[in-house]
Image (cartoon, rainbow, N blue to C red; front, side, top):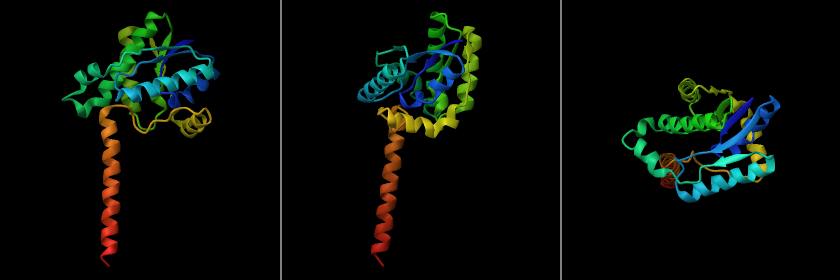
Length: 193
């Protein structure tokens, strides 16, 4: 089988790629991530994928245009559904690209992450499968979570601290701010005694 693998980043590819290859699947990569913010982060992730692709001899097509405006046009005022909108954008474009290339299937490295909604990704993948008449390859790659982390560290790949979108970046810092305030509160309470 020839499969187009949507790649969100290098680290999330380190486990699925050998699993797919071990199953006899010929993999081509596709970097399409209009959600990533800011541009420096987009560039770091694309460079990380290039590094992985070189080491793994993986052919990858890169959508190098920074697609933040299109992503925001679709998500603003629908923030509560932002992940599903983002999944749809990336899976649909991957299905279209796989069909254009004459491949038999498509999948995504999003299926590696413990932080992504697998049920939503799977449902959208099946929807794209029907719409574009190309198979969606579902596999739960989360079982290799630690192995992928270890491999990405060994490969010296850039490892990001948030999903990629501006909203997840804000949540990351909000969480840090809450933790900092909590620690300050504990210190103030303990210091008063």
